[in-house]
Length: 603
Figure 1 (tube, rainbow, N blue to C red):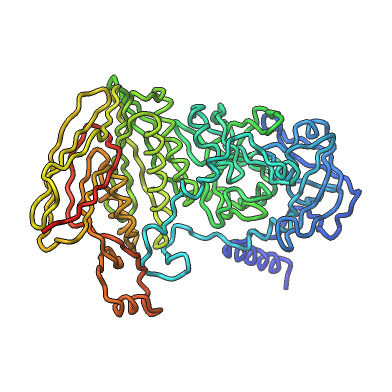
Figure 2: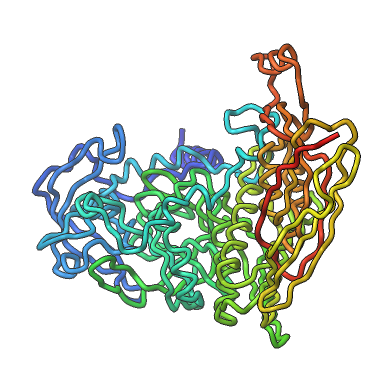
C-alpha cells in the first residue's frame, strides 16, 4: 500500500473512532503510572490570576493503589511552592494537569483540609481519567424508563424521591463544623459553587445541601468574561460548569486537565456524581485566589457556554466543545407590596438531582433580594412547569412570614424532584416560571375554638360543628359545618378531622396512592389541596389496602392472603381508615392547625 493509501486508511479509522464516541489517537505525551517512582520531581499547571497558566513544582511521594476504590489508584505528591502550603487545597484547582519531564501523569484532585508546613496532594492518574471516554456519549434525554429495580409498573407515591428529606440530616449540620476525620482525610478539593446576585440569607439556607455534594456554595461577584472563547479551554485553564445563567448566575469552577480536538477531561474527581449528564461548560478567568483557614478557592469570571460535560465519573468529567446542553427557560416574577413587579430570567441546566435545588435557590433568593423577608409579609406563590408532551402544571401556595416561605420553597423542591427524578421516563422541562406576589400584611388563619353544637352523634343525623377562626391581629370569624353521619353506623366510633391542607394530605398520603406513569405524578400534584382552605373530614376505621388509587376495605382474611401472594405485582398500601365525607372552607390567607374528635355513634 502506498503512503497516501495508508494515510487515507488512518483518516477513516480516526473518523470511525470519533463516531464511536471515543477521542482519536492521543497527541499528548503520557507517562504511565507504572513508571512513576517516589522521589521523581515534576510540575503542575494552573491559573491563579487572569488566564495565564503558571507552573508550580511537586515531588512524588508514592502511589496508593486502592485510594478511591478497588483498583482506583491515586498518586501521592507534595506541592513544593510556598503559596500552596499556605492555602491548602484550593477550590477550583481540581483538574490542574501534573507533569514529569513534560509528560502528563494526571490531575491535581485531592488534598488535606488542614495542612501544616507541607501540602500533600492526590493526583488522579491520566490513564484512569481517559477510561471515562469508554462510557461514550449517551443521550440522557432519550426515551427509556422503568422503576428503580429495572422493571416497569406502578410505584407508591411515597417511594418517589423527595430531595429535602434526602438531605434532612445534612441540613441539621451547620456550616463550619468540620469533623476530626475530615481534617485528617485526603479529600477531593472542594468545588466552588459561585452564586452571583445571591443574598446571604439564601446562602445560609441552602449551603448545607451543597456541602453534601462536595460543593462550596458561596456568594461571589461572578461576572461575564466576554472575550473568552472555546479556544481558551486548554490544559491548566479554568472552566465553569454553568448551572444557572442570566440575571442570577450559579457556576461551579474547576480546571481542564486534557484536551485534544473538541474532547476534554477535567476535575480529576466527580462533579455532581451524576454518571451520564448534560452540563453546560464555559471557559473562565481567575480574578484571584481567596485564601482562608477553612477553605481557599478561586474567584472567577465565566465566559459564554461553548460545550457540555456528558460524563461525570469517579476519576474525571468528560466533555465536548461544540456539544451544547439542553436547558430550561427559567424565570421568577416578583411583585412587592407596592405593586412593582421585577422579572428575573435565565436558563437552568437539566439534571435530575441538582436542577430542582438550583431552581428553588433562585426562587428563594428572588424573595430575599427584592425585599427582606419579614414576619408581617405574606407570599402568594404560583408555579408554572411546562414539560414537553404534557399539559402545563400549575401549583399554588400561600406563605405567611419567612418561616412559611422557606417551607413552601422546600415543598416546590420536593415536587420538582419527584417529577424530574421519576422512574418512568426522562423529562424535558421546557420552561419553569415562578410568580411570587407579596402583601404587606400577615394573611394567616388558625383555629381558636371548636365546638360540637348538636350533642352526641346519632346514626343518620348530621353533626353540627362550630369552628372559630382567628386571623393575625384580626377579630375572630365563626364557621358552621354539618357533617352527615351515615345511617346504620350506630355502635361505631367515627373521627371528625378539622385541619389544614398539609394535615389532610398526610391522611390521604397514609394510603400512599400508586402511580405508574409520569402523567399520573403530574395529576397527583394538580389535585393537591389549597393551603388557603380549611378541610373537614369524617373518617371511619377500616382495615384494608389501597392499590392504583382505589381502597379495598374490610377484606376477609382469604382475600387479603390472595393480595399478599408473590403473584401480586401491584404495590399495595395498608389503610387504617377511610374518608366518608369531606368539605372545605376558604380562609383569609394560609390556614394552619388541625384537630380530631372521636365520635361514638348512638342509635
